[in-house]
Each structure stands twice: as C-alpha cells, then as structure tokens.
Image (tube, rainbow, N blue to C red; front, side):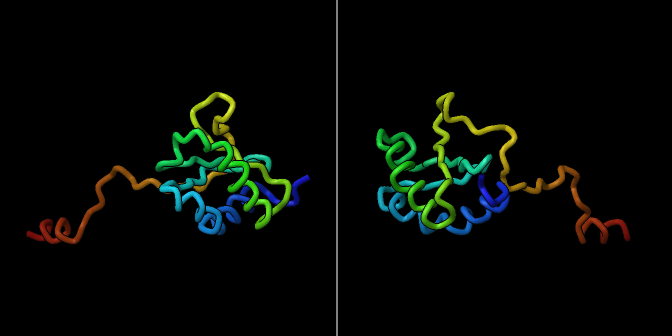
Length: 116
C-alpha cells in the first residue's frame, strides 16, 4: 500500500523530473508529466524519444528506476504513447490549469474612454 496520495506523488515527481530527464535530454527528448493514479505515473516522452523504438526501455530502465530511487520503490511509470494499453485514465490526478475567462476584461483605456 502506497503511503502517499496521488497529489503528493504528482508534486514529488514534478519537483524531481529535472533530475530524471537528463538522460532523455541527452538524446534530444523530453518528458512531460501527465498525471498520477494509484501510484502509477503517466508521462509522455517527446522530442526524438517520442516515437523511438527504445521508449519502453527508457521508461522502465531510466525514468521508473530513478523515480523509484528518488520517491518510493513501489512507483510505476507508463509512457502514454497512443496505444490502448497505455492510455491516460480520465480520473487521474493532474495539475489543474486555470483557464482565462473568454469575457474581455475592461482595461484602463476602456475606462478612460467612458469619461469622454
């Protein structure tokens, strides 16, 4: 049983991802953290690593191994690569992004124009 919530794991991965991505970066790739569910970390390899035939090995032997050493030995990592078995669950924890409202905010010039 994992002693951490998905949110705590997400934050820990986010704070340590730069340490894990050195190998991937050296090959012209990058790692995007997509979400966490039940101690499974969902990532997406991008750049030259995105379609590489070695992406499964990179995920398991580099990313998973290093995150297990840094955070917890029971973590698992899945590279969301477009295959049905590696899909991102809809109910996983992910960072919430604040969307800017579509409503135009009144700026200083708009307020000045009203005076004339």
